[in-house]
Image (cartoon, rainbow, N blue to C red):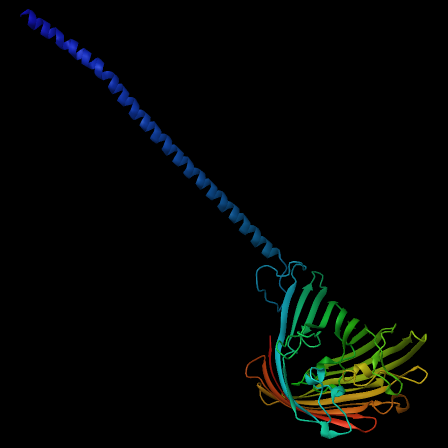
Length: 468
């Protein structure tokens, strides 16, 4: 073996060692980079897993909270007072947030459109006045010359459309409370733009009733306890038998027990000046309220009732210092008598001293002034009878007669005051669907003065009425 061969063999291990020494750091560096990459990926995976676990925990918490809320609502619904019988809830929670829990709210009324043509013998009823809207005997013109009557005139209106709201509540102990308010669009204030028939025909809301009741007690404005609303005829006109009808709504305090009811009601005195020298006026001087008492009996046959009224009249003349008082009393007997399933008779007989403003929308005065300024109550009488017949569930007819008369002392009132009025009414009402009425009514009315002058009214009236 030569020296070169030996040297060659010695160089190979050395070269291998040198080569290893040179490659080892690179391999070590490569291993370190992969580990770091793997560690980074593992850390990223851990973060993603942690995020998933956190989202799952939040979702689970929300589910638990929702289940708890549902359980609370279900428990509250079970604990809430039951809705009174006959009252169906329109939503799961009360719509009367300020009312006692369990209060039932109700709403109703009707839309009524009236169209009428009127012919009066002694001049026209003033345009825009109440007599153009419904039969009002005091509005019938009376004059000496019937040639002034002119042509008939027509009126359309919807002012008697009505709505009401009621809140009824019964306590756990059985006490019954009611709050009721009712309004229409007749009698509201007018101005140049409101209530005119030139363009807008808009009318103000007018309060009819507003009262609260607690068991047997009632406080607020409603029909007078002296009036029998249940005996009113089925008329197309607002009232129909206005002449003989007691018709008053006013503030009062009323107590009802069984068939008996008693009330203290808002007082007012109407006065006709001596010899009718000036317009009738209200004094507003009363101290004592009007007192009423009523007894009622009813059954399948209908109902019968008797009512009494006691009043004080007062007028204080501030200019002269004169203070005059007078008293009055009246009686009303009324009812409804059913004749089989298709017919009924409705009636009323009313009379007394100082009945004036209660009868026929104040056709007569409560009192008249004497020459010395003292007051004298005027006697008045009135009544009506109405027959109702149903041809079928969809068609019915009514025939009515009413009258009123006043025993005026002509030495005090003069001869220009109303002595009497009377009217006839006949109608047919068709109801093609429940709550929808389409009616037509013929009316004849007459007003007569103490000097025997009289004026007549002839009217044909139609209406479309939908109750809800």
